Each structure stands twice: as structure tokens, then as C-alpha cells.
Image 1 (cartoon, rainbow, N blue to C red):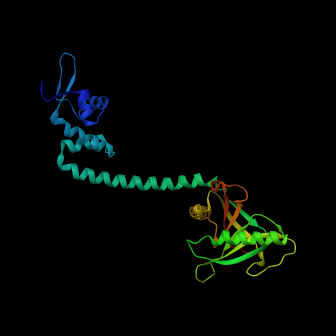
Image 2 (cartoon, rainbow, N blue to C red):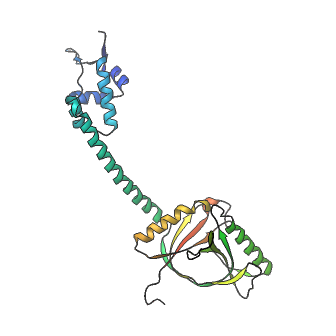
Image 3 (cartoon, one colour):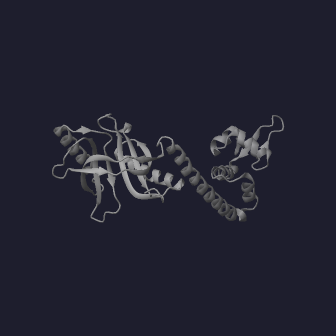
Length: 268
């Protein structure tokens, strides 16, 4: 008979599986146009394709079956049902975004090796320079200059090298101090100074990866510090634990992202 479709053909045309179509028939949501009395084959009409496709799309949107039935039985309710579902989806998305942020924090926590540590004072050869993003090359350039000078003078170099960023500076760009720890009697030359890194109590997270991706690590360390109710000063440092001399692979670089903490009363 023209216009009648067996269930397998109807399934192909509508995107609903035969199993789903049988279930919808059982609950009275979408019944076939006819059922053969002899073999119980279900037959659907071409006119039912539009409704079947709408049901599939509604289900893809996450609408529950009882609300779909309400829209089919009472088309005037459709707008109200859809608006209500939109609000429900918005609330679910907000909840899931919060869960995603929490999950990312948990995933980062172990690899970043979060810890509070008292950093010790040390003597350094230092270059103070201006950092003006995105021109970050001043840091590796300063480190190379320090390394070449220290080796030429035969100084005993300690590790790791690092740089400090002090928020109190008000000049153009950011004033950073690039530091190479050294032992013994040393002297400066030109812009290379002999300075003392004072150390202090700090919250640290270790980032593994190339230097151009450390930006996200800073925000992750801040979030974790705030979660632990630590009081950061805004003074930061990067300690190059594993870098160019250790591996040719930037993905294997290890950098300690350091946030110095406010001193508690009685610590002075």
C-alpha cells in the first residue's frame, strides 16, 4: 500500500532506531499508523515522519518524554515547555562549569606539586631590566649574559637560576631582576650586579611545559593559594628547575611558579 512504511524504513528516514520506535509505541507517544493482524508488523505513514523527527530533535535537546507528550497533546503549551527547559539547561550548564573548574583544579594540583616553602637567602649575579610583554626575550638574554660572564670569571654557579618580579615598581613596563646564584667572592661588571636574594616564605607550584605556556600556571597557583586562604603579596618569581641545559624538549621544562606570602605577626 502506498504511503505505508515498514519500521526499518521509517527508522532510516527519521533517525529513530527500531528499538526506540517500539518503545514509543508501547508508551503511546508515537504509535504506528497500522499493525498487521497476522504478523504484528508495524507500519508508519509518510505523514508521521515530521512528528517523529520533531520528537527526535526534542530528545536530543534533553527534553523528558512527559514534556514531549505534553507538547504533542497540547501544542499551545510548546512555548512554555521550551522556555522552562531553556532555564533548566542554563542552570545545568552553570553547575557543570563549576564542576569543570573544580575538576581542573584537582587535575592540576598533583602535577604542579603545590607546597609552602621557606626559601633561603642566597648570593646572586643579577641583571635588572624592563619586561614589556609580549617581549619576554629579555629574560633568556639576561640569563645568557649572566652565564657567560660567570663562566668567563670562573665563578662557582649554583642552581636554579630565576627571576623576580616586584609589583611595587611604578616605571614603564615591569621591572624584573634576573638572577644567577653563585658561591664565593664575586664582583659585578656593567649592568651585572652582585646582590642578595633575601628569600622568604612562599607558595609554590611546579609547571611542566614550555615557557610560553606558564601564564595559565600563574592563575592556577593563585587560585590554589586563595583556596588555602593564604595571603599572597603579589611579588612573584620563576625558578628554572629543569631547562635548556637539562633537556632539548621544551615540553619537559620544569618551572617553579613562586608567590611570596605576607609575613605573619611575630615572624620578624
